[in-house]
Image (cartoon, rainbow, N blue to C red; front, side, top):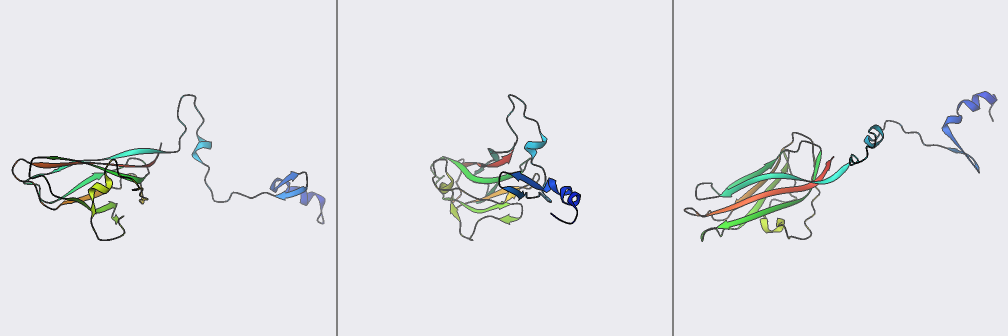
Length: 172
């Protein structure tokens, strides 16, 4: 004990009395209180936190007049971190045979692809395996963009339709 017994008792809140004596408790400094402690649990309502949710990126089509470069975009309304990109491709007509590739995957202004090479869109098909991504988080208002290219545009009324979905973790 120190010089004054009562001075030592003033700090008793910083200790945990255990069977083996005093143990120093860690103080939480500069940390915010988790949302689960601020919001009460309501029966029948899921607890707030992170959950797997889809972000729609829309749909587009390569046609005779569209050119060979198109984009899909999505704008999350809650904090979101993409984990899996799914591209569905439907081809209509005999000339709709061009190779579709992903040339950029942007979260805001930052390209998420590690190199400059294009990636075949089949790598992001619904049955693809081992395509777990770890994209930068997107705050509300940040635009997620997937840039697509086709090696040969369809002719006449033929078309290649593409829709995109980004599955990731979002705050519920």
